[in-house]
Amino acid sequence: MKSIQIAIDGPASSGKSTVAKIIAKQFGYTYLDTGAMYRAATYLALQHQVEQEDSSAIMALLDQFPISFGRNEKGEQLVFVGDVDITHAIRENQVTNNVSWVSALAPIREKLVDLQRKIAAQGGIVMDGRDIGTVVLPEAELKIFLIASVEERALRRFKENKEKGIPTDLERLKEEIALRDHKDSTRAVSPLKAADDAITFDTTGVSIEGVVAFISKKAKEILDK
Ligand code: DC
Image (cartoon, rainbow, N blue to C red; front, side, top):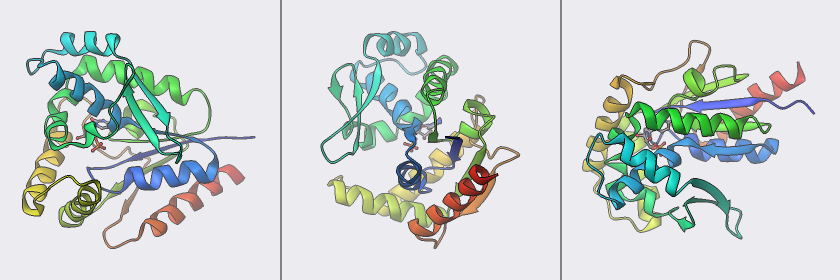
């Protein structure tokens, strides 16, 4: 059966991972959260007190504790470095607030992009991130670029954190999201931007179901061609 590559990019908390997971399930494709991989590298850097910019130390840690994914009994995705489950740890504020400098290091990006392409080569995939349509999978049949206002994205992350029991201040969250947007879109290597052939979709005020229906329809159109 024909399978395609679906690239979903966009800024922090634009709803990428939520919709990407649902789409992957609908189509029976693999879902890859590339943000989790940059978060895993950041976790290792912090855990081992790596100096900022020291990409060789992080590269060595990634060799020693390779990133892998698993599933729990509920079918939820788990993230590991070596055999340590860091699924929850990588969502903590300390990781979130340091991930921009780690993900701006070219050697780290090269290593993780290589891994992302290897996973994509195995079949139908839905991958979410910042540079999937532009760098990781430039040949993806469907490229979606999701955007939403800073206010709405901060509110989404606030609710998510509350559910996970992570204490958060909404105003501070808005500032952090705006700052991360700025850093992600102005960095020299693979900045956050829509691919020329991506469909940009503003999810402000749109339900998850609405976004899923839109992407699903586009994917089916390509598969039926
Ligand atoms: O999607 P997220 O918030 O979990 O991503 C965490 C960080 O990782 C984000 O601030 C930028 C970086 N990232 C990246 O540089 N490239 C990707 N493909 C995915 C994430």
